[in-house]
Length: 178
Image (cartoon, rainbow, N blue to C red; front, top):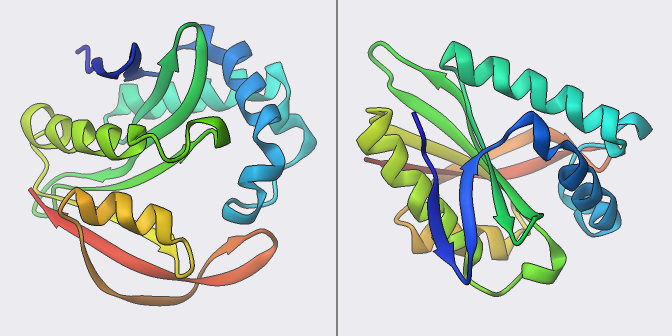
C-alpha cells in the first residue's frame, strides 16, 4: 500500500525506501547536534550512509511484518524529517507509538503538525488502528504542541522512561483515540 501524502510546499510524507539512505544520512549528520538533546546517544556508524541503509532495512522489515510504518518527510530531493508509527499491536489493543523528528531548518513551519495529522488518518483509515500513543521529554514543549494540535491528550508522566542524551529522563505520555 502507498501511504504517501503531500503536506505543504512540495513536502511529501511517504514510506522510507532503501534509496533514501544517502539523503537520510545527510539529514542526520546536518542535524546531529540539534537533535542530540532529544535522542539516545548514537554510535558513529548511525551517521554514515551504510548505517542509515542498515536502519532503513530494519525499518522496512518491520513494515513488511506489519509492526511499523516508517515514513520520511521529503522535500525536493532531501529529507527534512522522519515520522514512524512503531510497535504496532493488533488484537484487542490496535495501537501504535508515534515518534518523529524534524530538521532544525524546518522548525516552526507547521510541517510536523501536518505530518502527524496525516499519520493519524493513515493509522485510522488504512491501518485500522484504535489508538496512538506518544511520549515527549517533559520539557519538549514544541513536540507537546504538535501532539495537542492533533487532538492528543496528556495522561501522565513516566519517570525515567527513556535514556535520552545519556540520561534516564522523565516523559509526558500522550494518547489519541481514533
